[in-house]
Image 1 (cartoon, one colour):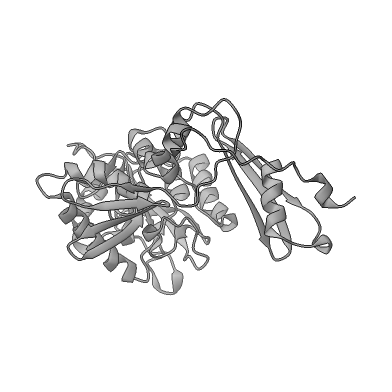
Image 2: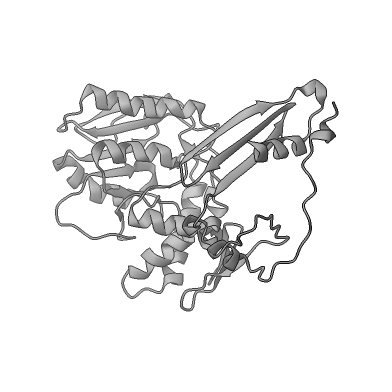
Length: 346
């Protein structure tokens, strides 16, 4: 039986009284239908004198140095966080962070660790603060970001995760007294010794995990929000003070998190329930469209055709579940259209 005989009936082309995408999402019509939009939506995400537009998940911001393209969700987050940094205008603060980020990207040994990896010490040690990197790349699941980027300044040292190569020499020197007298800080770094050998980043510290793997994102990932992990990633180590007592179970959890990165091709998006995470999520394209508040079921679907293998998958937002499968046989012909049709069927 030919495959064409199983094709669904052709849908009738009709005009709706109101075809505004936001109205359709907030008040979906009773009759089922398929609405195709030929052009992506464009949002004016300007704040104060800092002009910006966001489309397809990418924000373009006009800075004194010229237009900056960056992940739209992170820009949405910075509109809420950098505006709280004293009297300094948002555009000036972002320009400072951009200059720092570009310098870090030039450093061959600097990396932005994967958010999935950073969640592990945050969860295991209940870390609330992150040190290192810039406002452009710091994940939203930390309550406080170093250098006063966001969060409250506490007199007592907070449990924190530190990207050691993401600090400059002055910042490292300023941190050492705190690190020398506390036991609730955890450093992520590449091996600091010669020929990839371990070397303590500071006195009275010991290594609690080490592994090869794809533990970081590519350089410049923040320009388009790319979540692919770098296949050339260097060895990653986790260090803490010798004053701290780390259980064997905790060590194993950290070690497994590092080793698990060997199997990952992409990072995990931020879907937590913390306030900053919800702000970050609302700045994604789906968030700006109001998808997360849609009163019905929301599916994300996709198909692929890679090296003769076709696959299809889906994810159902309100139930937090999904599935995927390989379909067809290469001898029958490969086509991305077949994969796209199958994922909709799935």
